[in-house]
Length: 112
Length: 113
Image (tube, rainbow over all chains, first blue to last red; front, side):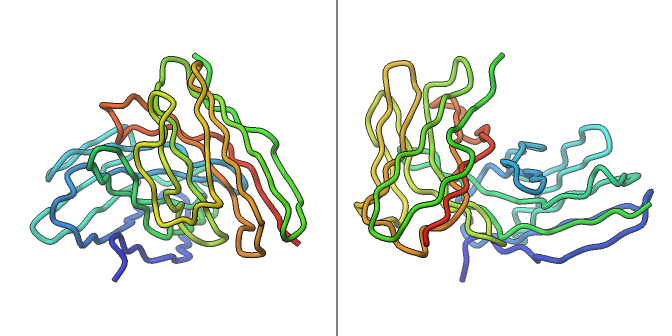
């Protein structure tokens, strides 16, 4: 079992839709969770960074963590064609050093 | 504020050769991590450097090695290249005690033929 699981998609939605991206993780010791956006042939860009359970909102993006079910979500409101990218969820392993453990990424296409 | 930069952008090597990839950290960051991203996969942690020493390593063989310099820039060296080493190699910089906030460079795409 992978430590972080993510549905690879692809996910195709019309412009203006609400997008829901999801991951699960297996290690209950994980406390920090991240969402990265990666455009084609580019490096990942940090979108959201959350600690423990709860919600965090930044503009059109909301990150949600439910530690009881080991579930991580990213919601995108009023999606735009420029949101078309691969979205990577990650958990942080901290044990003397800091290692990000990524899911496989979900490809999102927002069409006009 | 200068972001993370990597060189070269692309590289083509032959199986058995050696390669060196370079990374400059974001201004003010003292920790560098390297990741390998195969096509269609998430990045996989190779190792991390802090204060010029390797302080953590993922499941990669010893032919993957690195260096960190006093200005916090870093190199990734891969010896005896194999076809499966073809991937996007990503460098990420951070502050040691804010390890979750890792900022990535654009990556180096390595093709091994």
